[in-house]
Length: 195
Image (tube, rainbow, N blue to C red; front, side, top):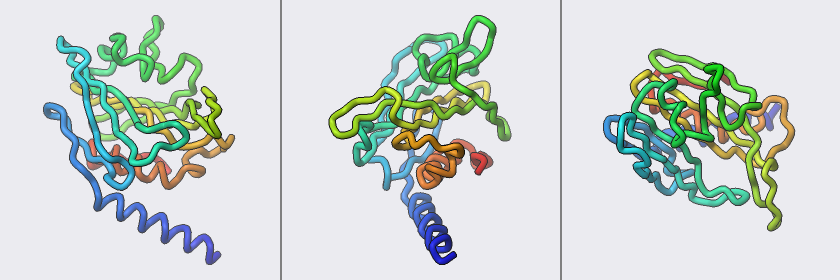
């Protein structure tokens, strides 16, 4: 019981520190905040300068984790259906001929999520790592999300850590999911990932 209380207090204090150490990140009229404890900087590159405008975005980790040094995504200034048809957003998310939205791959299990004026999809795809100088395309666990408010669509893939075969991925990577939750919550103050 004492260990559980200690773990709870550590997670609360980590979450509080992360909440208080946020940096603003803006592209045009889109704003969010990221943890300055976990990330050193955020960058963007314009990859499409016609309607819809699309940026590649990167959140550079302070410390590389198993060969992963950034969480990355796209920001598209249009609705999800329009953005999903453009190659610049693939492979993070894409639309198939049947109209279905997929994250990462056509076989990935995707869950629909919504809150206020934002909706989208999330998935927990396997991803690449490098451990002891050996690379593995599926040795890592990631969290992928695409969100839209029908004017802007953001997709980000977050690296969680080494794939541990967890049934409850949120629980296995709860500290990292807490940082991601704070990050995503800054997009809309009503947004909160399920626990």
